[in-house]
Image (cartoon, rainbow over all chains, first blue to last red):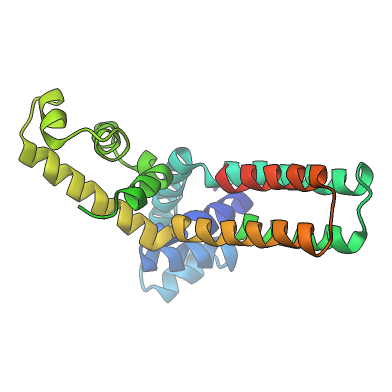
Length: 112
Length: 112
């Protein structure tokens, strides 16, 4: 399968667009690290059925990212945050207390 | 029809999930303020067909918002930005130049 970490992130962004069953199975595989055999047993179905579902859902997540680009934009936002925080430290030499406050709000805004 | 401004915002967030034709017609109606009669003439179809398409697309946009809540989260982010900027002015009394810089990055991050 593809990059598990990337799929886990896509699942964070777009998981709510899958059905509940699809979300559960994707979460078991990509977040909870269950094997195909374990998941197929829990769901009382074949390994092949689980494998196909995972592949289909992955394609759906990629299609959403292709259109909405939330993951790609999220990465750009993190870079902007890092540059700003660095400037506030190095260039503007703000107090660490203020920088921490700003950084916490930025983290909230980016992840919210 | 419903609140045009809200639909225009939903279109910003989720328009890319509609087909190109749907996006065009939604944009004509909600952003460019064309009438049903004008849009139906341009698309060589009936006013009723355009009306139905607009209604169907609006429901789709609402369904995406129901699941992803990008508009709702966007509004919360704007409130957090306003509170932070106000604190930097009133409580921490930072230089206006630094506040403007921070505010521009925040705007970028929220709208990006």
